[in-house]
Amino acid sequence: MCGIAGLAGRFEREHGYGRVASMVDALAYRGPDGSGIEAWSNCVLGHRRLAIFDLSELGHQPMLAQAGKLGVVFNGAIYNFRPLRSDLEARGFVFKSETDTEVLVNGYTAWGIDELVKKLRGMFAFALWDDDARKLFLVRDRLGVKPLVYAVNDGVLAFASTVRALKTAGFTGDVDEKAILEYLEFGYVTDDRAIYQNAAKLPAASILEWSNGRAQVRCYWKPPEVDDDATHPSFEEAIEETERLFLQAVERRLQADVPVGALLSGGVDSSLVCWATAKLGSDVTAFTVSTPGDPFDESADAIATAAQIGIRHKVLPLASDDKANLSDLTNAYAEPFACASALGMLRVSQAVRREATVLLTGDGGDDVFLGYPEHRNLWLAQKLAAKLPNAAASAWIQLRENFPRRGMLKRAGSLLDYSSGGLGAVACAHDGLPAYRKYNLLGSRLEALTVDQRNIAWSRDSAFQLLKDFLRYDRKTRFVGEYMTKVDGATMFHALEARSPFLDQDLWEFAATLPFQLRLRNNTLKAVLREFARRKLGERVATGRKRGFSIPVQRWIAGRWREMMTGLMSDSALAAQGWIRAENVLKQLDRAAASGSAPNQLWYLLVLELWLRNEQNLWPQTNADLHKPAFSCV
Image 1 (tube, helix red, strand yellow):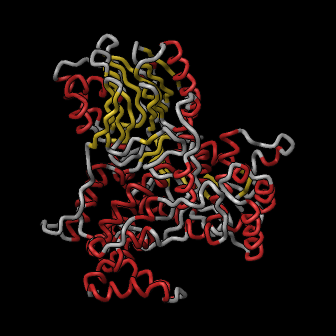
Image 2 (cartoon, rainbow, N blue to C red; image 1 turned 60 degrees about the horizontal axis):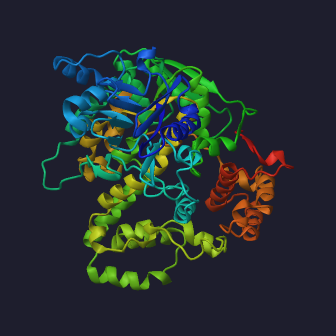
Image 3 (spheres, rainbow, N blue to C red; image 1 turned 90 degrees about the vertical axis):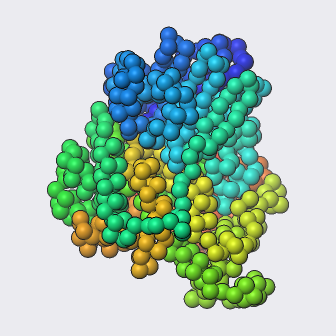
């Protein structure tokens, strides 16, 4: 894990070096173990290092090859770098370090960029400069685990691990209105946009090639999908193959020259990760963060699981007076980010970093093995669509506005929407922008706009393949924009490298082709993993409810944070710039206080207000308390 930055094109060398240096400084928290900058006539590469492999100076980046004609800066981990290295050594290449990074420059020389990337197994964002060809390549991993953003200005391409680093060096424009609207809709900005104009996120599984002042982006991988005409494994065969691939994925992620830990909650996914580390005989400590007295505390289940597995285990208690700052959320994430569990992940990362540098997690299991309730609901809607006559679906669309949406009728109405309108209906189902408009919360800059996702056409054809369409949509929005961003932002803020076996390419490709009726066997969410867990860990783990490390932000806005938010909104930077109508936000805050719980929209607005003040240094000089509003988990 590291931070990378650089630029390529026509520029004054000294000026370009200084701009890259400013980006490297902005990324310092991502790499506390070292920094470096290398410059050519048409390129400057910068790096902040978090040392994982070969802790010596031989692992320093930018890493050069061919007498300085090639240079690379790399963020991530290549799990199969040792077999790739052996292959390259057999071809006559000599290695100077024991890092995974060196495989990139030698692999590029041997195979070229496209063949190299096809061979890589891991999570990565890297930039490679070929001075002879005057080409820069930017590459992002298949699932978008590691971030990479770029901007093109006057014949110069700049890139960095975060959009904030680009902004620091002056490569971005003003705040993007459509990105703000996306944030208000979802609580995060998708990968289709960046919070600042003139900045873009390199899509997952993409290579950007910069040459002769032009950038071309190409996709090098697409996740496989269910082929209804193919022969599929039985449920028993699926469990056996999942176990084989999962153990292989965990073994790959145990490689490191620093202490490795594993996050252990009371759930299926992290328990399987810890089981696998013990099965492989690795020297790993499992960590559980305990919040005594909190209904979401999972330490009792985790202790029982660790004892059953026989793995070394540490419970890291967070006492009721252990405070964190909401400002951590705006400092850790370059864009406004209102995933409440990110507050928990930040605190987990801070606690674990005292004990380990690499942390295995269970992220991704729910996404590919279908563990979220909406997966089951959409599969049910898809099956209903196959039985619903076209005439009935058309009639429903005409009559749906008059259908009562209360109690069980609300769920029935949603099911008929999805069965009639497919993904277009799903994308409009949540209460995002309509809630802001209902209470007139949006300012003049936003009131006439909408997000592209709400313009997805309702379609019967989509309804017939709804779950497949949703998984494509979800992978490009929530999966990479929220889930991957949450883990990378929180762990890297504390210089901790997170690795998830469920994001392994081989395991993901296998699971993604399993039929939906197998992954949701007997209407059971992630049925394959639950049966896998039942056989290895017993009924308690297999049937345990999903909890997660949560922060009750809706309740706190209506209570302990109310005074702080009232102060912010009474002199709102968002309102002053035309983004919101603060007087109406205050009215909704009063309603929330009366009911004891705030809607998500107020939470999103609180985070956005803090983010904007932080980015533009708009804190009142006379009210220091607003600068770092604090909370405690009790």
